[in-house]
Image (cartoon, rainbow, N blue to C red):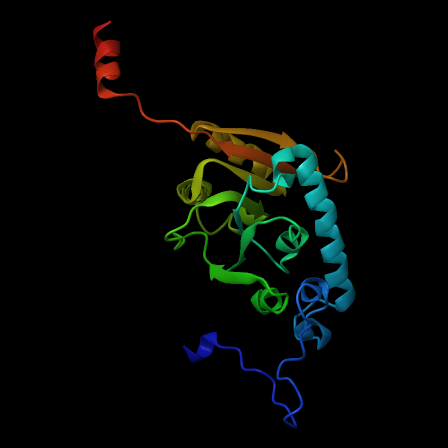
Length: 234
């Protein structure tokens, strides 16, 4: 287990806080995390963190304009962000009564789970080519930002979508954000899974290759055996 643990920086006296002092909640959510301030997260500066935070506020506002239910308190409670990065998606939803599980996919170039924790959020690692341990919960809304581009050479699209279908409650929603060609392939599969879906433009306009796919898992059941027999005899 030692290789899974990140040691805290050493301190020179009892008054110092190992790892850096954290702001109190809720200021902590949008304050620059200590490990970013110290420059220990490769490629992420304080300015980049602040830009990411503002970008996700803009994106969530756009999401709400497409799916108005996202802005209704109580409509969605348990949310899953499949590729959370710095936790901006969850941070931008802080004004709503929601619980967000932030996932850092195994194998990403920059490990940002520590940043998520320092923001006061919860998170975990997950390989999306494998099943996710969700007991005893299912999710009301799943957010998949560039997940399928990330895993395109690792496992089949169908495998990830079937796992998403398993952990998503009936009539739950999914927001996919990815390259338009990838979303077209995803939509073809989800149509066969009895999901309602539609592709919409990026928040910055139709010229962006990155698009959004909004989907809803329909509530449906297999026909009763008696109905099947009637169909055969008619």
